[in-house]
Length: 156
Image (cartoon, rainbow, N blue to C red; front, side, top):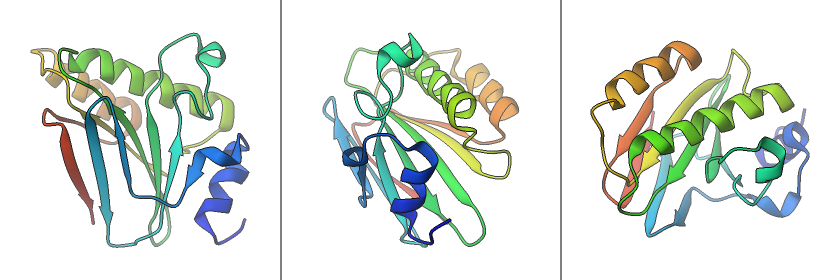
């Protein structure tokens, strides 16, 4: 595979090249996220109304996927940006639906890759602890819920 992360991502997913960008931030629904990585190699992929259409999954899917190239692996950060009034449970379900779809259709992320889910915005619910535990057991990574609308996340 190519050493250029942008090209690698397109080779993995092979869907609509216009949805891939060398960007470390995203905004939608009055929420935004910025990914800070010491590795500085980040590819942002538009998922919702981008490389994955609702008719492909029959379910809601997350907004963005950031692929972060680390030394010997890749980190897949699935992001759902929510506006006010939405609960975090629905956003977490969108993330898991999307991750399951990606694994089934593309075989990626693989077991060797790191998976993190990030919900920005939306209300916290009592069930979020249980949902985060299930996410960790299923994917081996964290599910993070940040209730503010502008978030920055540091990967080190």
